[in-house]
Each structure stands twice: as structure tokens, then as C-alpha cells.
Amino acid sequence: MKKCEYCGNKITEDVAVCPHCGAVVGGQQNTENATENKAEEKQYENANRKGKTVVILAAIMIIAIFVLFIIMAINIFKRGNDIYKNATQNLGEKISVSYFDKE
Image (cartoon, rainbow, N blue to C red; front, side, top):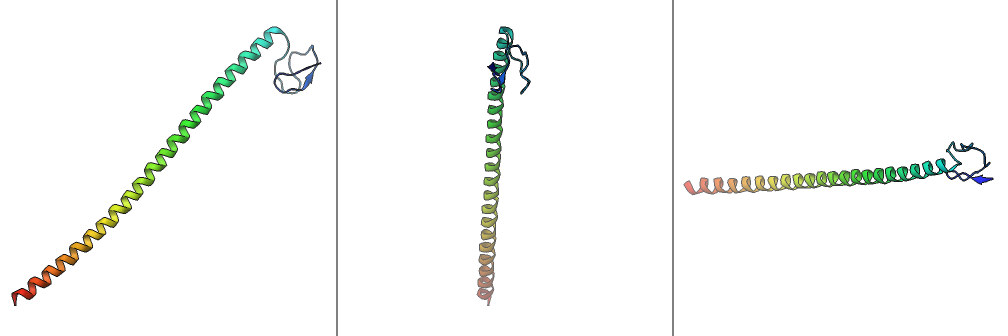
């Protein structure tokens, strides 16, 4: 008895397909194909992992930029309100001073 390269279950020597996982086993040609398939699967997994990493990093950057814009907008709004309050206070003082100066 031998073990399946994919699932590790014991299989008989004469089978071409593992009855447990369905993988093609046995023979030199099948072993070469299995090795090629494993290499292709690893390449695909690595590419898929790299793609996921890029997407996650891009999402984090977009969220960070969005948060920075919100913080900037809040600061601009607060600064605008302060400028408006100072301007109206100064204008009120100038009007009252100029009104009393005329008398």
C-alpha cells in the first residue's frame, strides 16, 4: 500500500485515482503531472496572495486619505467659524465706537 500525495490516505498500488480525494496518482507520467500541477497551484496561490495584499493596502490608503480629508474639513469649518466670530465682534466694536464718536 502507498499513500496519496494529496490527502495522505492509504491507497492500493494499482489505482490511478485516489478514492478519497479524487487526485490522479500512480505511474511516472502521473507523478510528473502532479508535480507540475503543484507548481502551478503554488504560483497561483502566490499571485493570489500578492493581489490580496495590494487590495488591502490600497483600501487602507483610501480610508486614511478619507479620514484626513474629514479632519481637514472639520478644522477648516472651525477656523471659518472663528474668523466669522472675530469679524462680527470687530465690526460690532467699530460700529459702536464710530457711533459714539459722532456725538
